[in-house]
Length: 231
Image (cartoon, rainbow, N blue to C red; front, side):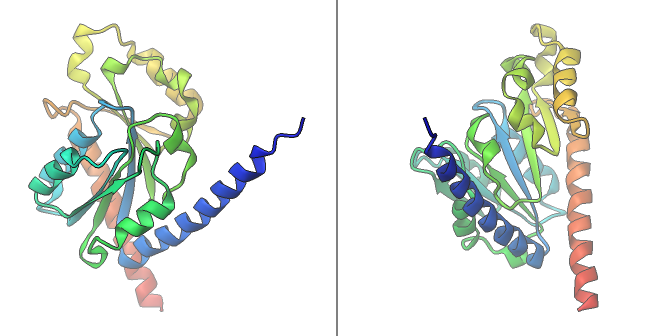
């Protein structure tokens, strides 16, 4: 029997990818570096974002897009209290953000006055992996309490990331989390990915994450300067 849903899915993803290219062009033209942060619920996406804002907002101009499946503003309010512009996307129950949603949200951010945009995707290890947003990097936050088998159970999302933050490492002494087993699973899927062990509670390891961001923002802005001088 012919599977009639395959062309439909392909068309949806193709249309989304085209919009993602346009969205990334908007970031490029503004000299903004954009990050898509994904994770399962409770892994610590918002904690990573808040720590990033606290450490880098004196140095970088940061904006945040919060994706939520329901019209609650808990995370958005936390970001707003941290003193940076934030836009909330209510997906209406959808399990992921897509390029169209992000494109509409960007109209509410002052892109010409930002250096970094952080997108907090919906808490999910399946759907967000399939939809490009137009950001420059995909970041996954995993956490020790989730267990060390997640790369083996959810391989797709691990294949498509640039940085993996292993959060809540302060809990390692109290769990059976096997770091070597976890890392091996990640490296099989994505040999080039950077794995950063951190604890948002204690601050351990966060300097590596912050250094990575600053370098990428500087590179993005150097590209804008180069293209501007050649035009």
